[in-house]
Length: 231
Ligand code: URA
Image (cartoon, rainbow, N blue to C red):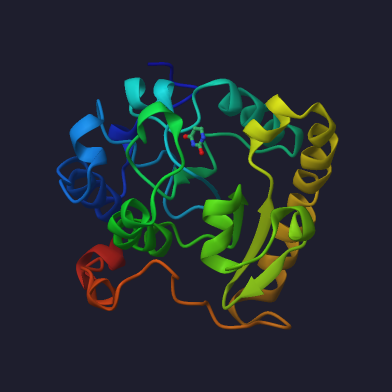
């Protein structure tokens, strides 16, 4: 495993480590029976920028790390183009186990992962969230079409959310590559804005509750006061 890419076991944040251990033991949906290993995420917490994809593919399932295949190489280039890297950005997926054959994750699989995903966002506590593809986009923009809203940031509470096409889209459709690059190029300016405005930024709307979060999961374990103190 290369240091440039990182390791989920290097998560130094105690709340994140606890979360990753719980994810590793999760039996909650069918994907638990076909996965090689869970892919919880990688990168520091807290982190100013969090990139959120869909679900692990074959390479990610083998290595236990998000975005280590061809789409990941493009993501690394995009991060580099705005002076960011895996060392400074937190990278995760909505779903933590590989859907067989890289099919779309099913609503019940997304629902099973949502309490983990919500805790991960709370622990990472990013100023800027970059959603990669429609599955993470729909957490903040339910029912929206990516072709209409990509590259248009919106503030939710203390965070700015920037919806983007999934980097894999550029591998299938070359015409999307410059579109994704242009959307990514907005990150430095948006990060600066988020830093300047702080938690009560202009035009802020409250964080929506997850469309996938069942009522019972709203009470899912949160980091303890002690763990929060360490964030
Ligand atoms: N696509 C994703 O959405 N996530 C990964 O980790 C890899 C490919």
